[in-house]
Amino acid sequence: MKFDAVMATAGEWLRGEGPHHQIVISSRVRFARNLRDRAFPGWAKKAERVAILDLIKPRVEELTEMQDSFSELLQDLSALEKQVLVERHLISREHAAKGAGSAIVMNRRQTLSVMINEEDHLRMQSIRSGLQLKQAFKLVDKIDSALEGKLQFAYDQRIGYLTACPTNVGTGLRASAMLHLPGLVLSELINQVIQAVSKIGLAVRGLYGEGTEAMGNLFQISNQTTLGEKEDEIINRLTKVIETIIEKEHDARQVLLQKKSNTLWDQIGRAYGVLTYAHAMSSKEALNLLSILKLGVDLGAFSEDRRLSIDQLFIDTQPAHLQKTSDRKLNAEERDHLRAEIIRDRLKLFPKPDIAKVARESGNGSIA
Amino acid sequence: MLCDVCKCNDATVFLTQILEGKMQKVNLCDACSKEKGVQDPTGFALADLLLGIGAAEEIEKGGTTQKCPVCGFTQADFKKTGRLGCSACYVTFADGLNNLLKAMHKGTEHVGKLPERAQRAMELSDRVRTLTKNLEKAVAEENYETAASLRDEIKQLEHELANST
Image (cartoon, rainbow over all chains, first blue to last red; front, side, top):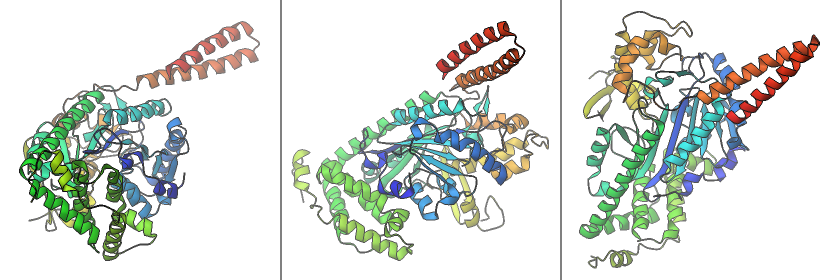
């Protein structure tokens, strides 16, 4: 499978059909594994990294799940191609910075990606649409079991799987979900939720990390600890917390509909107006406005069949996707113009928000 | 204000994170924040970075100037990177690491998945390999009785192996 084929097809999680997909964009599970007594990638010399890669890569490629896979050495991918994979969450940013001695092997459906010589020798990740942490876990668990029959993993009887960073030791498992929470943000309840979640040992981060202010009302929630808890306990605990957040988000939206409907329609109308008429747009502005439009679909202001085109814009307007489509390197200004152009084009036939319909359905007659 | 990591440049990136109810602040200069991947959207760099700084101190409490016999990694290297050199480092630096793991995680012992099945499979295939060599030897020596029983044993093990994976 070649890169162009990857670019041309959206992965399963980008099609957004999983359970609770209105609020849960994607679920991810990754295992960190290392070979016994071999230097971790960050400490190994180049020759050793290459030797380790040569040992691992064929074993990964021959997995049944990896038939007709996309398998590339990081040094053979362009900076732009790596960035596209980062934007699709198929490789980490850290992995994209790697060159000789690292590789990516990914299945055709783009639900399973294995990073070789990232921070650990093996980072096996499954990403699924909606709330599917259990399904993602099962897939990674399966290939882990298949690989451990062929490779000698670093494991300690007392502290479990050994990883380059002590924060991953034990299960080596990190489970996370990307949540879209415009209701909680608009009703200013988001900080309360973030604090509550942090208190129970889970981490909340924005789409782009630092602080708690997130772009596009997107938040990533994940387990913080990996030792002293079973894999299924970690997954179940996280799933339960996410289900609670989904409920809170629905509640917040109901309250907004009933008490602040004018603010809500104003936000949706403005987002629609700017997106359909702007000629320059930064990726941050695009994410924030698309988020509001997505909320509009969830609330019924746009018909359900418009959902996919909005979801696709979230990813297609990211810097590397933009440049890959235009097939040349663009400066920031050119990107902003192209981004606005693509959005205008896709929203050309998009009907105006149908607010009366929502008001009727939510039993709220007062429209300004 | 100076950068907490390099302690020579002015800090321009100020991070605040609430971890288990405790607020932690780290100030970084531009170069160090990039190097530590603070802008990293996908990793868990902030937590790692914070834990990494404390981590180096914890490991030093181990008190000696050890060097990992397998990979040559030292405490100074851990202080620099917040990462270990190889799986054997967990034995070399066990004293300091135990305190660190205790502070970092929910428990101190792994209760999850065991690569047991694979170990068993590996033992079985090792045994098959040895027996196959013996079988070849037995055949070469025309010791057919031994060869027959070896062949049966190999068959049995191969059957077990097929069922175990």
